[in-house]
Each structure stands twice: as C-alpha cells, then as structure tokens.
Picture 1: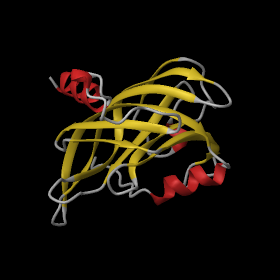
Picture 2: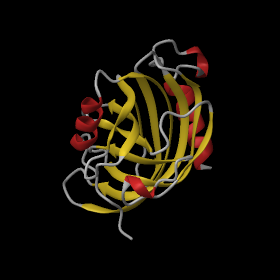
Picture 3: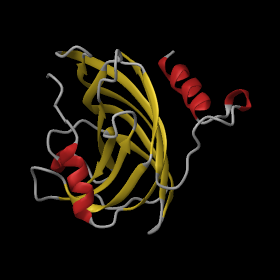
Picture 4: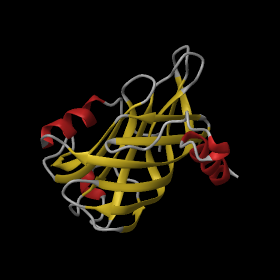
Length: 196
C-alpha cells in the first residue's frame, strides 16, 4: 500500500498523471522526494550534487549524493557509500552508525524534512531499501530510491516522537563544486539517530 502511495505521488509530482504540465519536472541538479507513513510529504528540490568527501565525525573517505531544497530550503537527504562512485545498478540501503559500517557495495542514507506550518517533519536514517543508479559519469549521476527510514517525527508545535516513513524519489545530480560543499551540506542537516 505504501509503495503504491509513493508511486502515485511521484507520478503526480512529476506531472505524469493527468497531463499536468504545471507540476515540477526533474531537471539537471534537482530531485523529487515523497514520504509516506508517520509523515506524509512530497516536494521537489533544486540542489542535487555528488562527489567524494568525508562524512561528518569521521576521516573515512565517503562518496556522497546530497539532496537539498524543499519548502524550508534545507529539506532533503544524503546517500553515502564507502565504495567510491558506483556504476549503473541497484544497491541495498543499510543501517549504519558511522560511515565505516557501510559495506562498499551498499549505501547508507539520511532523510531530513523540517516541519512546515501544520505539517510534521522527519529526521532519520534508512534501515532497508534500494537505490538504483540509472546513469553514472563524471558530469552527472541519476537514479531512483525507495527506502524505509526510522527516526524522529518533528511535531509542528515542537517536540518529537519515534516514527517510520517510506521515502521514495528520483534525482539528477551534478558534480559538487568541491568536496567541502558536500560535507558542509551534510553537516548542516539536522541529523538525529533513531531510537534503538
């Protein structure tokens, strides 16, 4: 049921349903993200970047895709791999405490959506799912993703509660101007580990 909701929302958001040409279109450097479950939100973002760097709190080399934008300007997520830039294919999303926990043929992921008016937000990490890289070069990385994330629901009036969301979407990422840009973006996200 949740997968159907994500697919329907992606179609509507991408303007593929009912010929709605006013819906946002995926363009180079952008992304679309849909959350269902304990938080239901959908939005597009205008900053999708990739490159090598190091994840916050570690000196381990990490290849990153960062997605940033949405209503608050800092909503989005990140995909982290310790195996360098991947080629085309489908990769598992795994739970991690530190980037070194991520096997080289898998990805760790984070999702951050801030509260917006009466709509709740969410911050958490993926515990299962997949990311599919549909093209990978030095100038562009495109793909789709669907994963279950566990974390905290950020209540509009303040406060938090444990929650689980299914996150789906697609991206067309461009190279980051420099690795520090990716790390700064990742550090700027309100990332909180889910309760264990």
